[in-house]
Image (cartoon, rainbow, N blue to C red; front, side):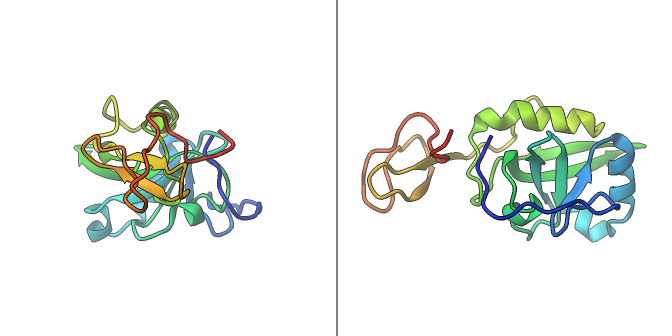
Length: 168
């Protein structure tokens, strides 16, 4: 599980956690949530997290992932876009792009389970994978591009394995 910062708070009766993203625990939850979105909003990706219970949470794209998760630890995080094909919804694109949690691409199985639970057709993996590493030297978080495992801040070598959450 990826570590989060913040405090624990309760859930409200409408599927939202206090201050967090909308909880999508079933296909009915997703149908209700998507029916409230204006058409222009549906054309861009949304912020998502998979919370500690394995439930998908969605928030507008410009939302912070840590806020979407209500400051809790998560099993996955990134951005997701949807497309409607006749009467069904499907994932059009999905990433692990979250600079709040810096999730590893190995978070995909938890994300896939949450999407399946929400009744959403999905790809077999992230459509855009982001590789995050923490520099052992300066402790800065880095996005590894083109397989170049070197810290952009201090030129230190970055590890081959995900190491962003020191407790993991």
